[in-house]
Image (cartoon, rainbow, N blue to C red; front, side):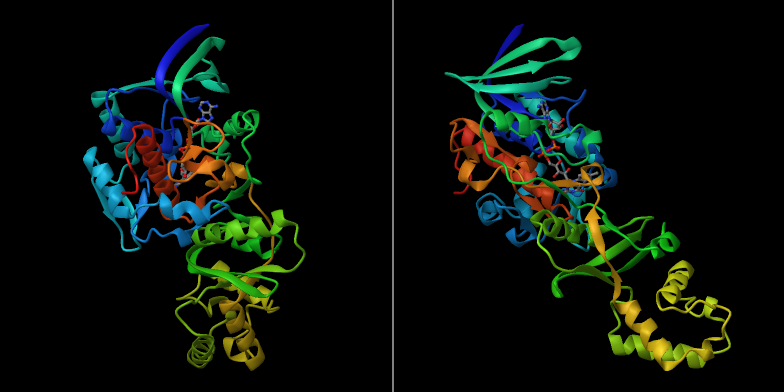
Length: 423
Ligand SMILES: Cc1cc2nc3c(=O)[nH]c(=O)nc-3n(C[C@H](O)[C@H](O)[C@H](O)COP(=O)(O)OP(=O)(O)OC[C@H]3O[C@@H](n4cnc5c(N)ncnc54)[C@H](O)[C@@H]3O)c2cc1C
């Protein structure tokens, strides 16, 4: 067995771990750091973010866009987007924001984010990357002992003064985040809350999805639980054979899963508004006008010009109108009101959400009782730190999760190097 000694061992070369290494080097380049990564390279999930563009933060960062049992404490760690942008700028990465506040690398390429962090810590610091290596266990002795298995089943022991657990969650296991870090936590008797997938498609039992599959529309989606409106989100809605997805559905998926995980009884529904810029009465008015104007049209082409044909067909089916050879002029008042109401409140009943396989993030993780939030340090074990998705914090789509990964990683680096993060 080979034995390696370091000041700091970072378990997981993902977004938060890479930022921790970068920030340690910025604060104290003399410290010997090792990043232990299961994959053959660091930053594999990072490279998959934002469809290869990496939506790395948001101009609207605020604790209200985060969830989980640690949410009440995130304000101590979250800085605003300028802090993160300046931090990246210091290591060479330029960023831009779009008109919805999402921040991306100026180059529009996620590689720039990874390259800037790695260039920085490799040039200015003493950071080793130990890839193809899995940390199997962490023991607290005088220092920490990390037992790892490397390439060709080589046994490696790492002895370190400080350990950073940045091993991510269970979402998208194909990117190697299959929840191994939770075994380490279990062995250390560190409590985690129930884990479930978030930012994930919602599975609905609805035969109309067969007609709609493959279509994307812009609209809004509102989630109702026991007839109480929980949240409304605007954006793209995507129909698949058994699921609805797209950014605004992803944003609702946490509440949907929370409802199912809680085992609470009650009703749950998602209402899609396919004409969010029109009020209900404007929508009805629009349909009455079109009937007057295009009464000679068959129903099959009545909605041409503002609805996708497949969406229009499914809408007629939903409203019980089967004969699309009918002339539009034959639509009754009742039918027009029903079409209009369905366009504004098209209901889908969630049955469950997709699994971790197609989720972007893990909800649940290390509970607040285990964390000193001023230092992101374990309350049970000194010099053991947590950052990123492994903590019970998850955010909305739009750069919020990476923002948490960066800020919590920097906070850990400040604690380790004896600097004050919140001055
Ligand atoms: C497809 C996709 C797109 C996304 N896009 C965005 C986006 O645009 N904006 C945004 O804000 N968020 C996005 N996210 C979420 C974002 O990727 C996560 O919030 C972020 O990666 C969490 O960082 P982390 O450091 O906690 O974990 P990760 O980045 O997942 O890193 C954890 C690392 O630890 C390693 N590891 C785990 N256990 C061990 C072990 N025992 N030994 C050694 N190594 C180990 C893993 O291999 C992994 O590399 C996206 C997620 C997905 C799946």
